[in-house]
Image (cartoon, rainbow, N blue to C red; front, side):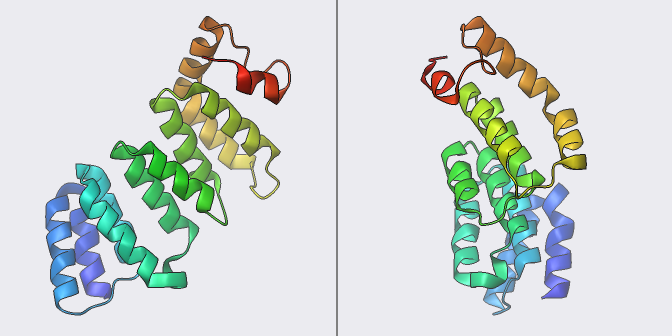
Amino acid sequence: VTAWTAMIGGYAENLPYHALNMFEEMKQANIKANKITFLCILKACRNIQVINKGRLAHDEILRCGSECDVVVVGNALMDMYANCGHIEDAQKIFVSLNDRDMVSWSIMLIAQAQYGNDLVVVELFEELLDCRDVRLGQGMTFLGQVFTEELDVVLVHLVESSCPPFVGSRHQRATCKA
């Protein structure tokens, strides 16, 4: 599986269709994919936005079981779905993750912001700040650097729509229609 995965990984970035073809050849040779193989396949699907192949990979990941039930695979699934325009599927993966790291939060926050879901972004950000299971430290610095432009757009939109995102109770903000 190591040699196959290395080849698939090499193709995933610049020749993603070759990566997908090699993955099919690997399956025909009855070689079982591992979590690294799936990370490469999801990257290829993300790069060329082929949701059907991504969904097939997702099904195989589910059949893989606990060996593939790790946060990095969940993050790759979220990223693939979000970049293929399926934010609802990305959100389902996010909610289903037993463990979320800063990458998980970053993917979801940025995806929601890119799709214009301003109130969801603010709610997610508040949830992140309240989260005791995530070490914020350097991750927040990274998130701030990556997310600054998206957050600016969200805040401008919320201010223009007269919805103060950081004033009042969460219930008041949730009921504000942007």
